[in-house]
Image (cartoon, rainbow, N blue to C red):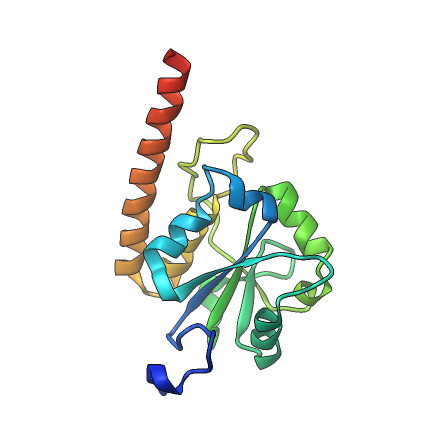
Length: 182
């Protein structure tokens, strides 16, 4: 692989690295204080990007990555392969929203259904407890990214994100307890 120098990269594009995370985010998710996608961007910096989902106007940059064929969608389905069984993926699209919102985005975005789908190994319990009605077998966005990083051998980045996530949960939980005690 050839690493592009910053002056060789197209304007507005993510830097070429072994992997980038593209968070296809539901508009409502941006307003939630419990959104962990923003934490992913804070920790991974230029290797993560939020793309706000618009049903009728797909993001041109996202479509460009899809056309290049270097994208996989992290989405559990009957056809999903384990992420450890895939190679040559530079960009992972992760739908950032509640599970109901994620299903809506997936079902209303035909450009996603044709993508190679990957899944993370089952069995990792979620530590995310800041929202009601969470599915027991599902992870939040940040936890998914941690698992992707681990699967791709980026353990230092995974550990950094996991540590930030633990601090995020502690901080948000304290605020919730304070509100309940008031």
